[in-house]
Length: 435
Image (cartoon, rainbow, N blue to C red; front, side, top):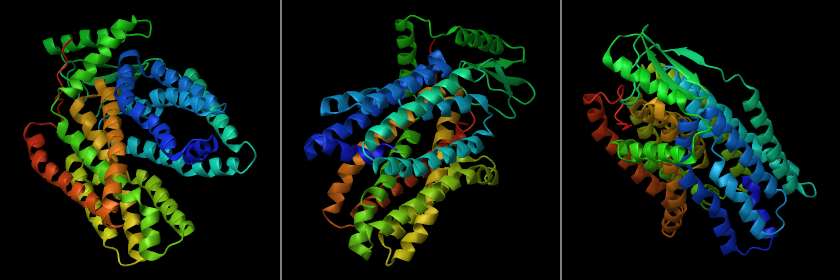
């Protein structure tokens, strides 16, 4: 609702293009540094408390935005939103706590589809409200009200202990034993993960006590203990050998952003397509992307939950589609590539997230998802710069550069996937937690 209106509002407040660009980058920079920290914090204090805090502080930010009558107040309003608007990431972490590994791609696909519907409807509602007097302020207060309603729902939902039986091996870090059929279940209380295994072994006892330590975490811990735990989890991810999957995420994020970076301008220069028709084409692609979320489950079953293979194939398809778009001789070929591009990118994003959780373990799901969002934020910073440089040569420069980056991601996957299989990385955690 708000994103398409921000640039117009900043200009209406009297900012020149340079100031508007600096102000606009505030949110992205804050998200870059806060995603991993907030995700890790949700692992420490629990999903309910962290989700409530993020929703309430985001509501505060949008409320301030609705009162922004000058640049200073506008920047102030963007700070809490940039720091704490991570409700989607925390919800993904909570879903990874609640479902088994085999069900996770299906559930994540449905969740992403619901999120995509919001991204489709939001600009329509925001645009309608803006047509009326004081429309931007009305949109901002409406957003604040939605976040407050969501906070109320989170507060009222039952957060008592939930037991979820595992149907297959659950990946986790070295402090928790993998769950096997009929021997184990996951318990989640306030979004904190605990493993309960019936197998009588020293490791099972170790995991039992580790689970008790997890259960002892609460929001009432001293701040220094929370910060220490957050720092420990972030260090765990930073020192792990998951650099390859994060690098694939970064390369593909930049490639996809380059595809969209000058889409409207390229359509006008290459095919004399009017902005209105380009808008219809973008809406069509966004709608397909939302519907593609429901295909993730069936496609994953078709691949028998072989997520590395599915990620490789979706990356190859995405690379091919960006190339076809860059070389498209007509609008109809662009329409065809947009159709399959929305599907391949939706499946690829779900695969990357699932692989991060498989290799990192659900006990650190908030940290891992937050780290993934930070990597994507780096892509948002780099993509406009690379796009501007590539456009100096040709309107097809940005997607052509995207093809090169996507090919690099394909090459990296071809090299690393055999090593994942040899080490059992697709079914075993590779993060070591020192307690």
